[in-house]
Length: 392
Ligand code: PMP
Image 1 (cartoon, rainbow, N blue to C red):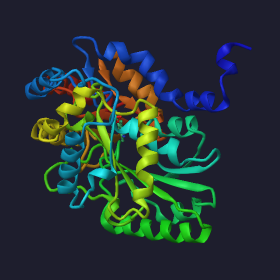
Image 2: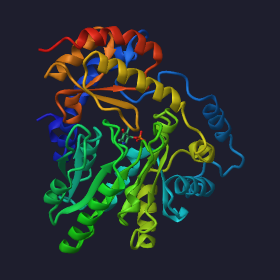
Image 3: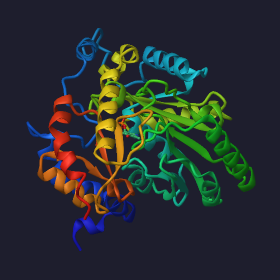
């Protein structure tokens, strides 16, 4: 038996859960990043970062005391700035004591899973999920349970969620605005979900927590408003990140916040801080010191929205079927060929790199990121027009 086979079962299952995505990224990742490629694969920057972002980081890495880079608690002014800004955006009084700085949304999710999940606990997630949810839940000893989103608009299926809850359900993981559909769930649905979770928690004598992955909360198109389930369900944890609002995602930073109505939130503060510090979870000192400024920055959203409008109109005119996203970076499009992997292979052979729905548990779709440049769109459109005629 090789060493990879000797790894714990949860590690092996975690890796297997990422298989479809990994295969595609290994095959095309380097080619998609090469000059001349039309890269629609991921929510990645294709242009230089905001100059004010780089300046803020440059300033923030200059130590003003020998203690600057010390081990220690997170930097309080960053926490205060984050609590203030998040609270204003969501219309909630977020207490700075309920905020934990993280290395992006992913590390906030790991922190919460590690803290809350007993081995074998079930974590409900909506499908299509973000690619790493299942892997992370398995790695932390949980059992992923998937509930499909329904219809062309990827609605929450409240009866199916209710039916999927068992006495082992510990967490419901929701992503709004949703990747890849760009859907923001309305308060009415979130209130319905809250009622289900409240009743099930009481029935089973064990609290079900809601984790709301709000990574795209600031990537909102005209007319869209962010709605957080924290307004509806008290036991909600919020995950936020700069990976989308600033689009420099490998410069890791974000935060987790507890909803102001979370019961016993005072008792959760120390366990959260301890888990965060022990896993090396807070962002680097420089990132922490830049955070108050990062809160005020946002990528060129009108440019992303123009690209959305142009692509949606052009793709529909070619015969593609897709909804218009309200938020986020992506178009999720029906593949003309039933085999979306073969379809995305065909595009990739012609220098247009997208992701097949198989990577999102939704065969028959493909995803395009709006973070590509306008020039990439120019070059990709004739190829997409030709591809629209493929049927088998
Ligand atoms: N959640 C969702 C829904 C995402 O799409 C992403 C990034 N693509 C993340 C979390 C991860 O965000 P971060 O880079 O902040 O860890």
